[in-house]
Amino acid sequence: SVTIGVFGPGLPEVDLQSINLLPHQLGDSGANIDLHGLGGIVAESLETGDFYEPFTQTSYWGRQSIDMTFPATETYYLVVWQAEEIPGKYVLDTGREEVFGIGDLLRFPVWWWNTRAYFGQLPVFWLFALSAIGLLSVVLLRRRATATRNSQKVVLEKPAHTRSL
Image 1: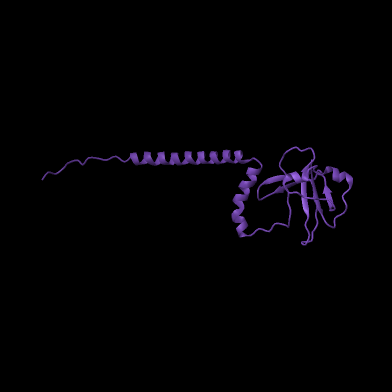
Image 2: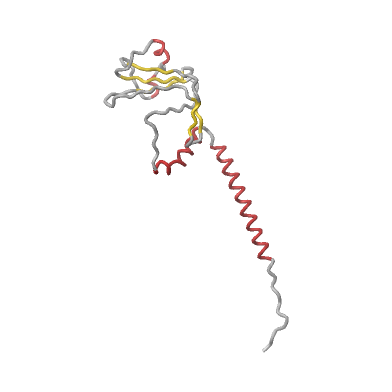
């Protein structure tokens, strides 16, 4: 199960059980974060309802939620880890409620594509796309064949008599 934690000034002191859940070498992630002296809130994975995201047509398992506002003048760290160190994909939503404008709607195909790539669903997309191209090709070839047959039905007749000069 995946655990998330928010660490920073002014947050409650983290209990020993939560500290044991932290990655043993947080600096190895490349961030070199020193959490000593910072408070924190830790949320372990819980079973909650599924969430369907209609724009990218994907479903997510809801697992944790920390809903709070942080002062802009301080630095806070959001840490995500999996204590058993089993690799996998994790989606984290942060920030404000999404409000889409015209520019966002124009970028939607890129978002849809990137979401499919992240979840490894592009083979399904390619199968669908190739099937659609194949079906379109069959329709176009049949139309062309029908048009060719219709044009070959025109018979040229030789005039009954010719005039010589």
